[in-house]
Amino acid sequence: MAQAGRIAGVELGGTKCVVVLATPAGDIVAQETVRTGNEPDAAIGAIAAVLDGWWQDGGFDALGIASFGPVQLDPAAPDYGHITATAKPGWRNTPVMPPLAARYPVPVAFDTDVNGAAMAERRWGAARGLADFAYVTVGTGVGVGSIVNGAPTRGLGHCEAGHMRVARVPGDTFAGACPYHGDCVEGLAAGPAIAARCGRPGEEIAADDPAWALVADALAQMIQALACTNAPRRVLMGGGVIAQRPELIARIDARVRALVGDYLVLPARDYIVEPGLGTAAGPLGPIALALESLD
Figure: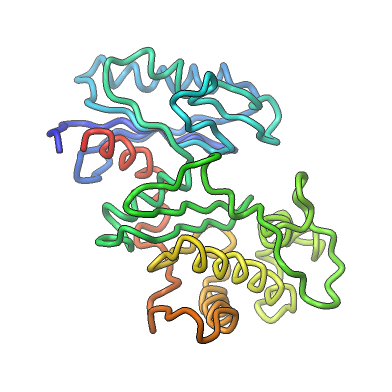
């Protein structure tokens, strides 16, 4: 891998953007937070102002951008580097990578925020040594970074497993909360879906509330599908919902094993685990992406 002294990264989230400067070892030396808001020009301008300051004060050797999605990841597409069909007001069809890449004569990597976090976990966290794994974040949405042969999956687009539809638990009539698909996994298990189902946010719902069994079932069905298709050797689960209810991991693991039955042989332990980097996986995601561009 080419030697690099400083790496810049942009983690663009739906609420805030974290701009980071780090070493190739993953040590963050500077970090700034920018409000995402509903005006892309203002947010991207503020991001550029932070990066410009670092560029003038010693520069950086590569830039990684990890964005909320969906995004266009095909370099041959005319809208490569754009956010596409997002429900976030103001951001649909917004160019994110092009205006930033044009400012700095360095390699630029662009991917989803969850793929970035997954690659950070592979480089520094709970997926070290693994070429095939999945990173699942359950928060405002359900995002999945599916890593196969050491790289995020490609094809029609990036992984959108959070929007797959799953079998409903008999008797559950909740319509779901996804604006696109209603009762997809995200519409059943993300934070807003839990709040819509129960009438209050997840942090106010008791651990023994029956709603958690429904959340675990939807997520387990999604992971079973991943196990049968991309065959991850480990699944990392994070995000706000899991952070509030970490006991869900054991519940989901047990349900996945029941769904798989004797057909697939899953690791006896440490198959579904918490991320090793914790909340640092997000900001380190674009750093990991940028380092991949230098490999």
